[in-house]
Image (cartoon, rainbow, N blue to C red; front, side):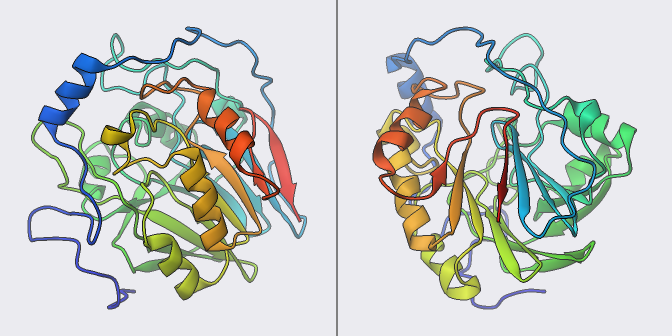
Length: 314
């Protein structure tokens, strides 16, 4: 179901961020890498206490387990939903190079409960991990929701039953309605496919409430637009990491203080931090975003969970 009020964001061959800065190009990427001063951090942090989620969640509230990075297990009576799953050792197309995990996943893949569906926000390797999706599909039939023009990649690998959504479209699945909403980001898995597929966030509508999964996003007017259209989310999952240096990262990733602003604009009952703690994707260390968030959140209900930690929002 399309929403005609969504601004134009496709020029016939490439997607783009309307009324927002575009992601920096390859020349700026090289400039960043040549001048980068990444924060020093341990190669591996062995503090994860893995947990086993319940197979079903029958309470009236919402059960949330942070698995790692942006992988979150959402559990309610209408079913179990998983976001941007990654269990691989690296967020990379290669097993020998690329960002390596600094912490274990908080839930073993084999301990996942049956899933109603999986949400993929965009095609970057830390959000669309094909080896993980292949393992999920081999263990259980899996329905996967992806942004526009990303379904072809998954179908080529025979991964799951795939549905594509554009901004403003929605889909009814397992007593849940999923709404695809704008994000400020970009897409690319190689040198020649930049912005050929869409990026997005999702509103999950069930039990007369909305849960907002922002995916990857810079700060923008879309938070106000989401609140105006859907009302205040019951829970918002907001990214806080990979934000330094700001001159390079600000068009695509929020800093912790911007995530707090987004939380306030959305009017979320509770927000939960994602996109931190597992991979070092930018100059900020794995735990710097969570420390900064705790420093700047004030009295706001904005939670930082450890990998494997469960919380019930009543």
